[in-house]
Length: 96
Image 1 (cartoon, rainbow, N blue to C red):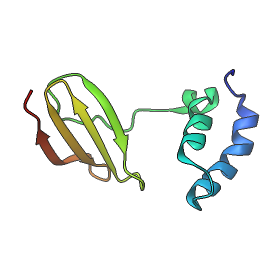
Image 2: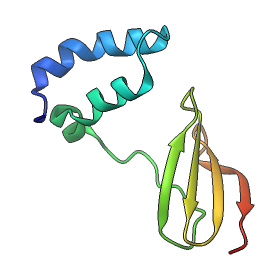
Image 3: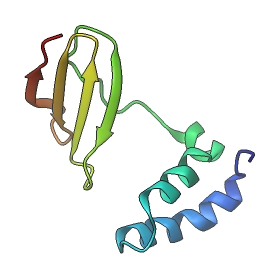
């Protein structure tokens, strides 16, 4: 499947967001539609640099509301960030 064109995505994105907010659209369908959008990818910008890891970050995941981001790193730490402030909310250390 190819990258979606801008018009196709902008027309369907509003519908996707609305359906996702109402719980009518599974997360994987929404994620795939957004991920495959070259138009949206080109519009991405860096809004904040999150500090807290001393190793490369291998995994990140958002909570359902988009207010928290959890990240796991080679430094054996799991960080939970408050996205309103960018500060680390919780740090967990895993022993190898």
